[in-house]
Amino acid sequence: MAQVPQTFFDALAVRTWCGLALETLGRAREEIDAINVYPVADGDTGTNLYLTVESAVAAVEAVFAGHAAGSGPEGPTLADAARAMAHGALIGARGNSGTILAQLLRGMAQVLAEGDPAHADGQGLRLALRQAADSARRAVAHPVEGTVLTVASAAADAADGARGDCGTVARAAYDGARAALAATPGQLPVLERAGVVDAGGRGLVAVLGALVETFTGERARGVAGSAGTGPSRNPHARVEPAAGRVPVDGALEECADGAAAVPGQEGPAFEVIYLLEAEDRAVERLRERLDALGDSLVVVGGDGLWNVHVHVDDAGAAVEAGIEAGRPHRIRITHFGAGDVHTTGAERPPRERAQRAVVAVVPGEGLAGLYTEAGATTVLARPGEPPASGELVQAVRRAHAREVVLLPNDADLRHTAAAAAEQVRTEGIRVALIPTRSAVQGIAALAVHEPDRRFDEDVVSMTSAAGATRYAEVTVAERQSWTMAGICQAGDVLGLIDGDVAVIGSDVAETAETVLDRMLSAGGEMVTLVLGDAVPDAVAEHLEGRVREGYLAVDTVVYRGGRQGALLLIGVE
Image (cartoon, rainbow, N blue to C red):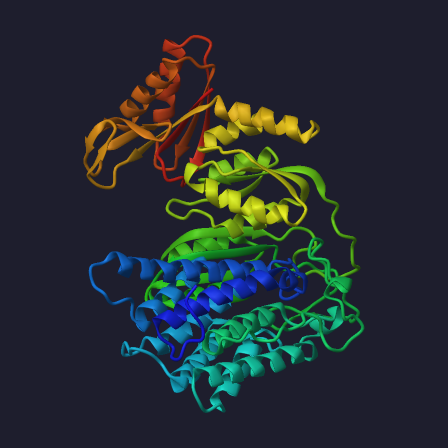
């Protein structure tokens, strides 16, 4: 962490602010989750904001690391750091609140990076905060007062009236945001009924508090999550995030687009989020189409890359609209489930915790479905996009169990999974980390999982099954490099056994057959094949025939993994 306070808004100040914001949201995350009732009472606003800033921090740190590795003595410029912050937040944005925060940071970056100045002063910070508030409001299809947008505008208004250095401006913005946050229950009936302030606005106040600390060295005074007036001062008293219900006393409840919802009538059932590579004109048409499909529409970004967030009943139609507009990727579809959508009615008791659950990282949509059918809670890891520890923590909480078995299914995720396990253990959850290095090892572990068995016995059995499964993958070399099997060229087909390159070939089926023969030479009873979306069924048929003809009493099972990075995953038990 860089030293505070910072005199000007330069690259180091961006780095410091991002780090402090992450720490502040880490402390406030559970409180913010607990008061999350709008637009959906799904209890994850604090977590989504944390994950969004975590992505921004990673991008900024990567810029500093890149300059440190270079030969020049100078570090990144303010423009470098600000753009990295905005880009990191954009690609890592989670949920409605995280998407809006990403646009706020992008708006600030547009001003801070303009003309590539060495640093920005108080005037520059005022302009950045104004651009942030205005651009975020434009990104929301139907802005609603009493939300994070109101808090952002109040912060910018207060900053406009401040004169002085960055510390003075930051403190004015923070104070203005706090006052606006306290007033949100009077602007949104759902907040007043629950006795809480807006969760997204509370998160923004935390981020602005970190900005104050960056320039003054003083930690901003805390903000309570409950509303100052109303029948319920305790954010937990009227809202149960686990159940997702919001009690309503009146006849109507406002939805995210300002329309009224009839009590008992469900709203959109799915949250759809994706990154989109598209031109501006295509995005304008996309906004219109998504606006007709659902609500809580937020489209942020620019320069060809956008983050799209919407709540809809037809998730497929929302994704298809993105495909027509450009190239969507990192698609996330979340089913709110009963009580997590825009529903009204009587409050229900919190859902009882299960005794035991399995949480697994999976590399493709197909395996996510397979693991889910087997009862696991999954975290999707797309090619080149490993999940952060915060996502694993969120998944463990979502599993809602007293005991959790965690399967990282990737050797590179072992430390990330260990950090997540340590965090949730402090919350009273018993967690066992099984160091699975491939999804096929996870399949083997899940196959012997028995939740009615003693926890330690179940973990030992699952660990033994995973350890007895050799794993391999067939992939394509991206560049020329030295390997254990010799020098490979870009485009060569590589067969990796237990993580090391063992075969270099030119044909997927032939390379996979060679890999399979080497693995079965040591014996085996079961072969698991997981095909990526680019591999035809003929490859699986060829390999099944090879096992059937060459290895007696060896069974083969085939799954479709979807977009999993590797062309083929192979497991031999």
